[in-house]
Length: 73
Image 1: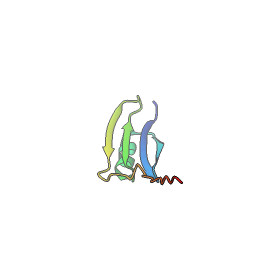
Image 2: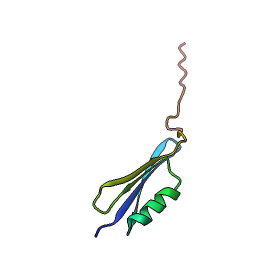
Image 3: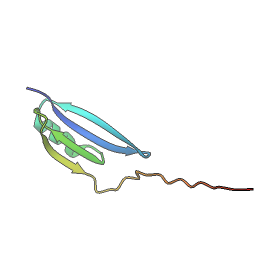
Image 4: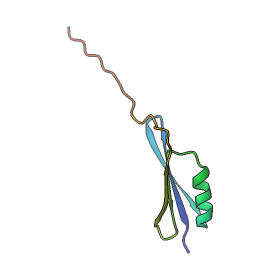
């Protein structure tokens, strides 16, 4: 029997961080997924099937805008 995976996605200063967490049971992975602070969480069972997908209702600041100034002499 394989491991169950929880993949978390977090935006950190405009950079997407993706981490995989491994668990022995689907129950453990679902409990972790429900209690982790991430913008998106996906739970996969031991066969690789997607079992749950959650997204935070908060919209992350994904894109930083920059302004450029052009001056011509």
